Amino acid sequence: MSDTTKVNIKAFRFNAETDYLPYYKSYEMEVGKDELVLDLLNRIKWEHDGSFSYRRSCRHGICGACGIKVNGKAVLSCKQNAMELIELFGNELIFDPQSKKRVVKDMIIDKGDFWEKHAAVKPFVVADIDEHPTHETTMSQNEVENILDADYCIQCGNCHYACPAIEVNEDYFGPAAFVAAYRFSVDPRDNAGKNRLEMTANLGAGVWDCVKCFECAEACPKDINPIEKITRLHNLQFEKGVAMRNVATKHAEGFVRSIKKHGFLDEADIVKYSEGPIGVLKHMGDAMKMMKAGKIHITDQIPFMGNMPKSKNLDEIQKLIKISQTNKL
Amino acid sequence: MSKLKYALYTGCTAKESTPELLSSTLAVADKLGIELIILEEASCCGASHLQDFDPFLSHVLNARNICYAEKLGLTMATLCNTCQINLAMTKEKLDHDSDYRAKVNEKLAEVGLEYKGNIKIKHFLYALIDDYGLENISSKVEVPLSHFNIAPFYGCHNIRPSELQNTSNGGENPYNPTSLDRLIEALEGNTVDYASKNKCCGFHVDLQAPHTSNALTGTALLDAIDNNADVVVTPCPLCHLNMDIKQKSAGKQAGRDINIPILHMPQMVALALGCTEKEIGLKYHVTKAKQLKGA
Image (cartoon, rainbow over all chains, first blue to last red; front, side, top):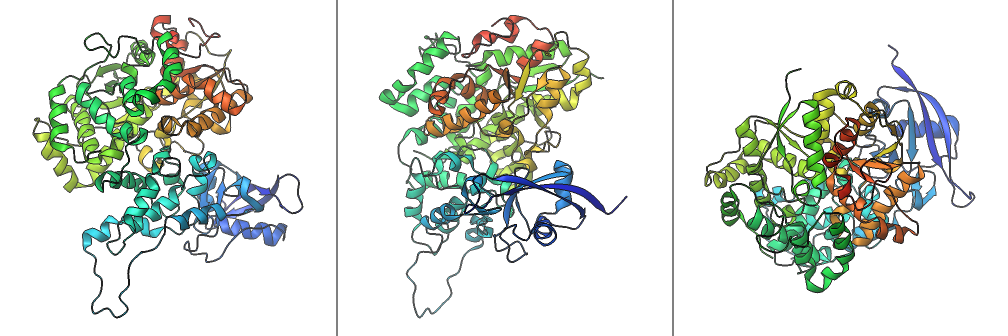
């Protein structure tokens, strides 16, 4: 078996200053088993077209400059082995910038929106510094572990530009900013935790607009799992009493209310409970459609007449809720 | 082949707003000779929202759910992607963190249960494909779906995060999943290749961010329509609900009409295996599947 594999790379090309429309250009090359995506980017530039543009710097997976997408998968070019991608996608590799709509030239995008949101959560320790400290600020093992791996973020933007909520909601902070918000909010030296939690609790911009698609977990080259930190921010809102009483928090808490009563989720009741008596009215159109199709029934909300199933051994479930519930709205 | 047997975790939706999911699943299992034992003791998995409020409670309740499949000594089969991920995430947490597992088991002991971690959890889609086998399904087809262009919509919680999901989904590539495509082909349908097939439907923010939800559902459905799909098929009842019920609002937001039936994965199999109209239950759809029988 030969040590190299023939690959057709289709690279996204666009120059915002001269091109009306973007296009893909094909480059054929033999790829060796140890080559990285960054090597292939270099070879396009050095062997085929000197005008091909991309960001690169450290080549050690730490500066976060070289994130691109290959066949839709977010990669850090200097960390991603090319052969692994060939195994995953076959011999045609499609190189795209992280975000096509933010392209300046080829693989280079304007990351301004990313930096703006990242900076907004105060990604640093906010503290009054004693100019002449007499002792170190120590952290306990638990405090260090509580930061999880949030400290490893290199701000490459892979998760941010893989996030579908960002794509359609420009107010949304996005996974990378939330990772930073979490990391500094749980730092025992920091004094801005409450402020950050309040920011990330807002509807529209905050964590409640996360669609739970796990694209960020898949996209992170440092395996940070941003959605885990988003969930922790949700939890902290309740633990620290920052959670506002709104449709999203009531929806999360409403599951306990339903499970306690039925074991199952009462699908109609959770909408009613989360939205409140006025808010629920905007769902009447959908409710009528569902009723007409036999998905829900007019009797569902009447005790003993409705169709609500009940879990067997419901008393066990009720007891477990009683002894295990830790948070309150 | 020895008879396949699973502990069926139905989830809430199959028992409530999508009864057609349960009836078609049971009909398919019956046709194929797969035994499904419904876990009547099971509770709601928390649908990815309960853990935002109270993660410990979510783990305790899901550990209890798994306990009942363990008692039967059977692989747990799920019908909903979100049930699948919540149960699988609970299992992963408890299997890899013995201190935490002890804390959960302390609570479970109060109701006479213990989480052992000795069974697998997989979505019914992968039970069909990886355990039963596509060739075996193919040989049972009575009504080939050759007249239909079928767009597979995978749903996030069966394919991401791949590290977790690959333990039960046959190593599906989250950027290019193929299982549903292969199932469609085994039923002799025409698969529709489109970019949105592995994307998010937006269901989980439908209450607090309807604009986001409509945008994601609308984009995916229009992508399927623009690639000549007659129907969309999904293994996730939450994707189904969002895509079936929200077509008018998603279309309004996108400025285009959207009208395309959304099938549950087992409904599609049931159609091809010649199950009855009642079992397939197309009448429960908001967007009627006029081109399919019984609608």
